[in-house]
Length: 328
Image (cartoon, rainbow, N blue to C red; front, top):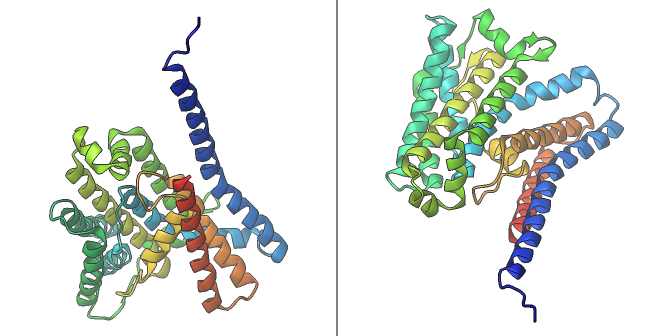
């Protein structure tokens, strides 16, 4: 008389669940890319100028600032956090670049501006990781604090930037590709390597998936959470570098509401607001979806106020799909 071992049925069930999980992950990764491809195809029919090289280069240039910001935001959201201060931190770095360039060279201005942004990120991280302040509250306070610093530093008056080499960072081309796009790609490559190929990156996912389990596994949750916010601040500084070099002026209102665009790009790209799931590749695709949508709406003459409705609807749909996927 043959018997079915107790372990055989669970093994089959586990195999089925595993196949379902793989299929679900595959759909999640390719679905966002398919949406971008479909949007590009539709846009090419709506306006014949969309696929022109000057317009595509313009799209790449326009999405670079928010795209870079969104890379840092991805780290934060993967840990189940949020950073509402990145736009204001960008503003601080912008005015510092402009102010320092009045008397110093780029070699001095760029590191100091980015280090200042990282220092503000460090304050965020310490508040969240060790003071126990919720990320929303901590970074909301930093949003106002950093913006105040930018206004105090400039006295409310924009500072012009006259350095031609600095101007070229945001407006020049290298091998036919806009320099801001190359900076975005460089940021993506480094961030992608860190998240996928290093113990720190794997720990970031672990913290977002289950913080208590990560702590019990020996992950220094407080330290790594702090580092994540430092990364977000530093990336905001890099984004500020592109912003300042594109506009050639240090204005204290730089980056206002950019944090919302960065969060939108991350969410549309498939990174879960519940932590532990997502990638910088998805964030890039999400950034491009928002950029292409804004571009085609401009080309077709849609009112800017109406464009905000499209962006809001896109975010809601993305979160709805994400929530359904998580429940499934």
